[in-house]
View (cartoon, rainbow, N blue to C red):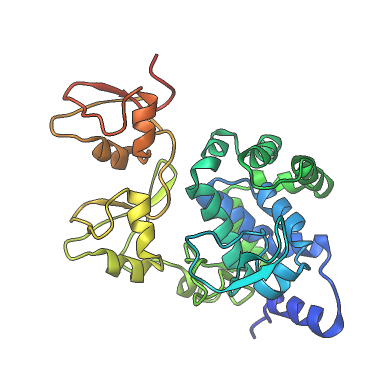
Length: 327
């Protein structure tokens, strides 16, 4: 017998009975998705939960109830989904509307991972929630000068930092124990996609996992990728992997309108600021983009770490720094 969605139940209860979700209930409800997002996007689960609690009033704010927006993310120019308007820093500001709260959690991860002003945060240890809290304020996530302290107080009051230490194997055990199924890599920014997790039977968990039977998801520099097959094209991959076409262009730094080639590494998440190796010696015919794809590091950081002008040519035998800076 299936268990009723907790998310739906709570929302109905708020509307019908006026009951509010407590902070403890909020943590219990969303801790799994926060940990999963941490494993996928390297954002501390404690930070995600604390921001969700603070920004959404533990899921009771108007934005959370009416728009499933738990992080106060505004529309910006790249949002094509539904919108809701409310007063914030200015009157009648535009905020994103999601079909489910889980979509909001993924969009929060993508928002931080793909905007350059937050890139320095990913140099902090995943267990250093204080640095992350202060860094979010420094990057301009919030205007309140007390924002870091508010996050840190929530993390320490409710022991949220315990979730930053949960390994993928430990998460798997937690999910089995509590009968929770997590869908992998669903595109939460699309209002028409299904929720990320259900409190449902584990009899057939494979049915709610992302990948197709013959598509293997691999990892490089802690980033998900696939190897393009002979007849692959971006539209096919986008449909199969539940992603937007623009994400393939952005994550792989390829021009809009171009396509994938056989055996090409195709990243499903943003590349990082540094590689897992310190240096690379340029081989004949290699470009900065080739090296970027090989090691999962953004091209701009290859130029920056080596004090090279953007677009500079590299030569065979040249040693490039992929971690740290060239002196």
